[in-house]
Image: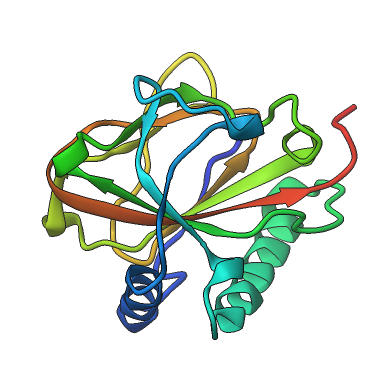
Amino acid sequence: MIHVHTIPAAFSPEDCARITAMTEAAPAQDAGLVRNATDHNLRRADLVWLDDVAEADWVMDKIIALVRDANRQVYGYDLTDFSESAQVARYGADREGHFDWHSDIGDGRLASRRKLTMVVQLSEPSAYTGGKLELMPGAGTIVADCAQGTATLFPSFVLHRVTPVTEGERRSLTIWCHGPAFR
């Protein structure tokens, strides 16, 4: 059975506001796909990589602790590192922000080693309409908890999407944990 693991209040409202403020002050780039490809029909969002944000080290410390505990309790994967920076995505109604069905494992050097994905909801659910994180861990689709600060973890091969934001804006933090190929 493929597990989608939810950690309510993984980040406090103050943590979410601090991350949002730090990334709003940083230059954003148009969200791409693996190997620097861009397809606005598939993905439309603005990204800030936390490695590019001063004083964001505390976020990674929190991420490491959350992933370590979730992996120990739920997954038991052979995880070795975080080879990619965490990213904060802004999905705004001004651009009909979305990310269509995809998995996080890809052909790229780093994307091929992704094993576990964590998405943290930074926005209050009342700040936007649409923007649901939907996952397909099996035959059916589930909707991730959208409470601010909630972390949703899932194997990186699970199909998922963010539905179009039709009002306001949704911000989320995403990180991938890497390791040797699944066997």
